[in-house]
Image (cartoon, rainbow over all chains, first blue to last red; front, side, top):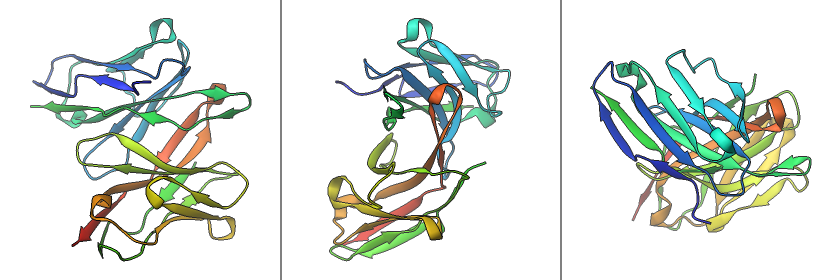
Length: 116
Length: 116
């Protein structure tokens, strides 16, 4: 078990460019989450996948954001036409369902996005 | 909607002293509660969780937390703080979303400084 892996760890982009982040969850985990954390704040929920199905999206996830999880394994989060307000840490987490209960979420180390 | 309040933004304690970090939550049903710790530029590490049962839960690194339903609180404690405990601490409440996933709502965090 190598934990949740995120790539890249840091990304600097110019305003208006598109960026894509990748998350590799813990291998047996069927649930995957994306969160965004701005400076001085706690993480905020963006979206959630169960296997390959995206089941929940926050209002924070504007039309410029899209997330996928093809084949229920890794996930990508794309931001189109980046804005300075998109600068944040993007965190991925995964968890495993056990019967009627669910385990806690395990977080990756995050991707720090800076839009200049 | 659920919410979490961490009233202390910064706390400074001397090494070896006891620690209590406060957390109050708002949630309509029985909550799933968590404490995570985050070092600078890193992801979140789970310290402990409360799902049900014993209201005093033990976690890693000598931390414990007590769930008090009547006070809507889940305060984190440690009897003797070590310099390596300096970090940011987040309390979170979990809510079920479509498909049974666990959407976490975080507080704004408490920054712990340890004086040697």
